[in-house]
Image 1 (cartoon, helix red, strand yellow):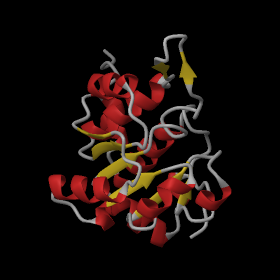
Image 2: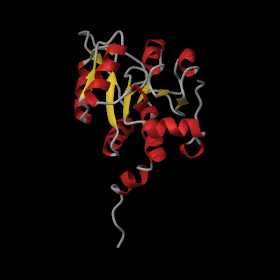
Image 3: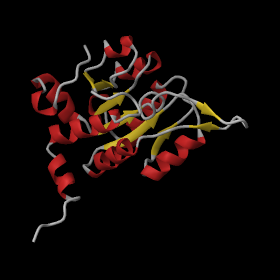
Image 4: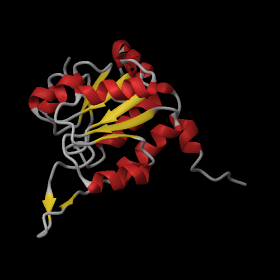
Length: 188
């Protein structure tokens, strides 16, 4: 594997085949759905910043028929709140070892590893990335992760990378135009 950003229209046949098989996308949180920064208030409470277009990309992906899940090593009320707001059912927090959660979400969805994509940014994500049918890294991921990803986003984590993934999958699977049309009013 070697990470690379390739537009949906230009995917090589082997990568296109991987993307077409995807029915589930699993995202890490810190460094993927956020920029990886950790903010703590004076009371020790943790705060996170999520990009609204990433969140809407997850909603669009779900509307296209692809399931979305989150597996993260940290536990945060901010993550619980944001994922509930997005309507995600499969949210696994506090997963220092992510493989058990990966196997659990596969069993819960009735899918196999080749039907799952995983997006991670650091070495803790490699055990799942190496088993998923499609391994994805944000542009600013750790070099060891970039070297093992099938595909790399143009944008960094927390700044549109998840939206890149959503649009890659929808465009490759032919659902993007249908989803986009749902936002366009009919012209009289």
